[in-house]
Structures are given as C-alpha cells and as structure tokens.
Amino acid sequence: MEVPLVDLVGICKEFDGNTILNDYNLSIKQNEFVTLLGPSGCGKTTLLRCIAGFEQPDAGKILFEGKDITSLPAHKRPLNTVFQKYSLFSHMTVAENIAFGLKISKKSKKYIADKVDYALKLVDLDGFGSRMPNSLSGGQQQRVAIARAIVNEPRALLLDEPLSALDLKLRQDMQYELIRLKNELGISFIFVTHDQEEALTMSDTVVVMNQGRIQQMGTPQDIYNEPTNAFVAGFVGDSNIIDAVMLQDKQVALCGARWECIDTGFGTNRPVDVVIRPEDVEYVEPERGIIKGVVSHIIFKGVHWEMEVEAGGFTWLVQSTNMTPVGTEVGIYVRPENIQVMHKPQTEDEEALINE
Image 1 (cartoon, rainbow, N blue to C red):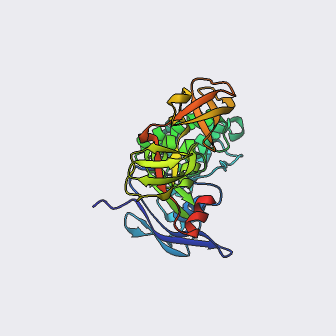
Image 2 (image 1 turned 90 degrees about the vertical axis):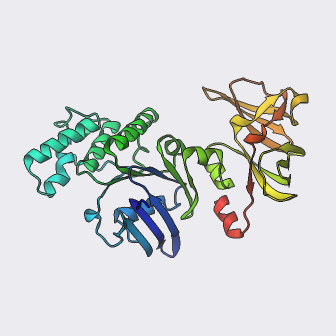
C-alpha cells in the first residue's frame, strides 16, 4: 500500500477558546493537486500553516511519508509556501530574490546560478533576473514568488490564496501556469482558496471545508455534480436547493408536483433536500412542463442568460442560451438524472454547519 506524502491525523486547533480545526483527517498523495476550499474562517489557512510548521496543532499528528514531522521546525520541512502577498525583497533583483534561500544554505555560486536560471525558465521569466520587483506586473511578481519557493526543490508546495490579488485575466492565466508547473515538477500542490472556479479548474482533489471540518472531498466533477449536503451545493456553483419529500424510490415531491428521479434508499415519505443546477432546468411550453411559472427577472451573463422563474412557490434560477422576456409563462422540466436528492441534517450541529 502506497504511503501518503502528507498524512494529517486527528488535527485539532483552537484560538481563544474557539475551535478552528476539529479532528481533521486528510491524506495527500505524491504529485497530487489538492485544494482546500471554503469560506473565510473555515480553518483552511490554519490547516496550511500547521502543515508548513508555522502553527502547532493542539492535538493530532502530521506525517510526511510516514514520518512524524509535527514538531519539526518549518525550515527543516521539505515544503515551501507561497503567500497571497508576494513578500519579495524590494532592494534585491529578481535573481537575488530567488537565490535568497540557496545562499542561506551556503550553496556554491555556480549551483545557485544554474538553479535560478532553471526556476526563471520554469515560470516563463527567462531574462528577467536583473529586473527589480517594482518594475514587474502583479502576475510577474507572483511568478517570482513561486520561483523562489520551488528553486530548492521542495517535495510539496503550499499556496495560500496566491492568486487573489490578481485581476481576472491574470488569475485565469496563472491557473494554467500552476497546472503546468505541478506536472513539470512532479510535486504535490496544496492550494487554499475561497474561489470555486479556481478549485474546479486546477485540482485533482477538492476538499470542501466549513467550521474546521471536511464537508466533502472528491474530484471537481464529484463535488459539482454530486454534492453531499446543502452547504456544498450552495457554496460550489449556483444551485436551486428545494425542500422536498421522497415519496418512494425514484420519485420525489417538490413545488406541488411529483418528479421522477434516479435516487433510491431514502425511505418513503421522508423530508429531503433536492439540488438542481440552473443549467439543468429546462423551460418549455407551459403545457409540457411538470410545473408552470412566470419569468420574473433576466440578466445577460455573456455566454448565457440567467433568469428567475416563479413556479410552484419557489424562485427558480435558470441558465439558458435563449432569452425569454420577463412576464412570459413557461413550463419547468428537469430530467430525472439531474435531480440530486440529499438527506436533511439529522442533528442541530449538522444544521449549523450547513447554514453557516
């Protein structure tokens, strides 16, 4: 059995009596791009700082290839961190910034020069070594920070919301750059963000967090298409989350009508939550819909129209490439395979986690 590169076992952390991480367990494989995704205050940055060695967990263990590194100082861990703020030395050139850690390690001048050249090429900044940081764009400065972090060949790279200060186009370009870098270097990336698009675009594995606990972990496709609870469905992408009753296997009642679905095992006449993505809602002629409604709002989003439809006592969010004017009566139809049925929270603690 393959030993995980990083293994977090029962990690707990409190600040001023507030629980930040609660019995947190996570395994990360070699050459895996793992994203910790969640709202502000969910514990993702604290977890990253524990992995890096900047914070000590109150309980639990951090294992690296099976070896306990929980008490190992940050500078002795085979990991490097890239922060949201680039933290470049303004009085040093790009090359001197990248070489800083290698000089502290007393490497030879030739070794340092070769490594700096290699790192600059990796981040597409070949020829920028003599430039000063203040002459670079935000995206270029972030590339320098990444080059500095990878120049000493860490086994894993920790990235704490490194793209949040960039504008949209630069952020999208850097997403592809990070994927390329991860594949070329063959190391693990542990990435922290609250941006769902970043998580879905770059990751092999997405870990959705709330209140210091894992809500769901899986591939981007699993997280988006098969959310395990209303929090995940609402946080990752747009959703219609509707109170419903599971009448029997493959049949659910919502918005005053019976709908066919593909889910089983929920019992009979049990309250459930139903998630339907806006792009999966089809509006048809009124007589062909399962329920009827009226378009109440419409917004042009560039690649599609986003509409609100009042139907069955619920405001449906609908995305379509076709524009339907406000006031139009439409029918609402959803294919059975696009209706996602989920258990409602069973305890007050679960309810609090989902509603946070």
